[in-house]
Length: 266
Image (tube, one colour):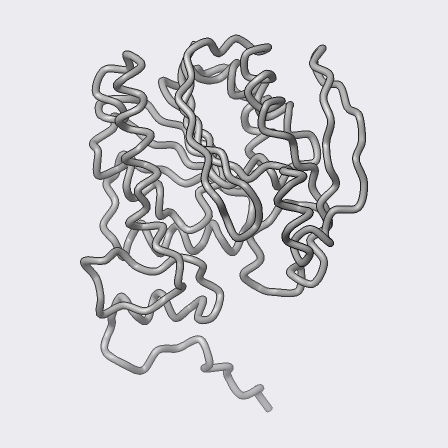
């Protein structure tokens, strides 16, 4: 006697973009682009994020003609493809986006189809540090937004960005002692301060423990139960150590900690 087929993955309704988003219902971080108000997913407007426009204009100020336009772009940790979508709309020659989280990678593919990203965009599934170690290609621009503070050796990423790109856009939260003292809930996730050295750069890191957020299916942190956060000035000093010379920076408050937005070129 044959088993009853499992039909829970079949959609009996008219095909729609909402059906595709609903494959990960309750797991999306990003809300759909503002010009698609009929669609429902997450709450954070990453498909309308002004940080990409900021990076585009700061890069042009530093002499990267056209910003993202007509540039070969490497994106690390695209999450659900929101920033990829915005970069694609600026008409680069290519965007290679590397995502380690399998569920996030599948959401990127859904976003690419649903929001009509171009054939210039390619999503890869795998560890971005392993990718940077393995390839020899140097990209015009590398983008690492929301990634640095999810790593256990963040300075290695900064070293590899210097090896594999001529200019970067980086957005990250950083360890800010004043913020931690004033915000006990996120502050309680820090457990220790440690000295580290990588590729000749000595620095201090602060252990951040993910805790209960690891239980959420939409978890979008790193690949371990903890990560190491850096201090703002040491992030900039590390980039200088590895060869970046021209910088544009802004600092903003963030619910998780003080945030640094940075564009740099060699």
